[in-house]
Amino acid sequence: MISRFSKLFLAVAVLLIFITSIAVIHPPVRAYVDPWTQTMFGEDGVESRHELHVAAEKGEVIMPKLGNATAKAELGRATWKLLHTMTLRFPDKPTDDQRHALESYFYLFSRLYPCGECAKEFQQLLKKYPPQTSSRKTASLWLCYVHNLVNARLGKPEFDCLKLDETYDCGCGPEGNSTSAVGPKRDDITGVEVVRGG
Image 1 (cartoon, helix red, strand yellow):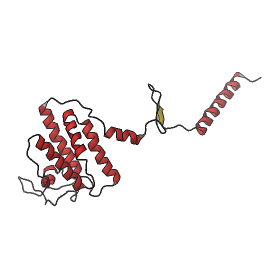
Image 2 (cartoon, rainbow, N blue to C red; image 1 turned 30 degrees about the vertical axis):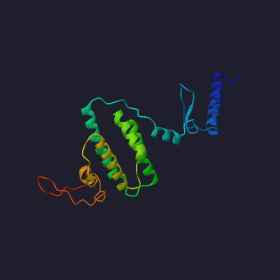
Image 3 (cartoon, one colour; image 1 turned 90 degrees about the vertical axis):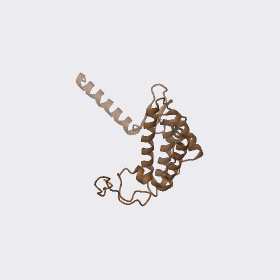
Image 4 (cartoon, rainbow, N blue to C red; image 1 turned 180 degrees about the vertical axis):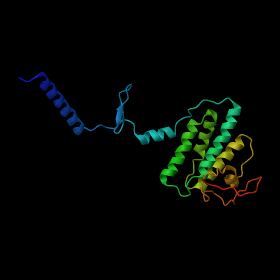
């Protein structure tokens, strides 16, 4: 007769062999099942990343109207600084992936911008004047043109696009990363040349 311990040992050994064979025959996949809809996502799942990406770019504005005029103005100034700095630091000769990333950013930005009515206006501008991303200069001048269209709608003066570097210089890149040949900057008080870069 086989003892109780031997039966238990044999049962555990068979179970471990069974579990190991399942893992070898069918390795785990990088997917999960949505508990509410019972659909599978991930590798070989129902959502294609490309389809999801395109749908996300071209959708409607998500944010509601921003009623606070002060918050809207502060947000606008900060946003233009971010966008201009980004295009001024964009590569001179971008890859297709870099070009697509910047273009996608502008389209997603037009959906998620916290001021809903501003986002709708920006979407209209993107339909009429799609992002130009073939180079740093092209991207920064395209954005400046769009910025001036917004300024005209708001009754603000036109911005001189030749002054982008000096207005939106973040001082965070190497010397050769500007779109124009602006000379070294000097501190207003001391007159000492300001070191750019990091």
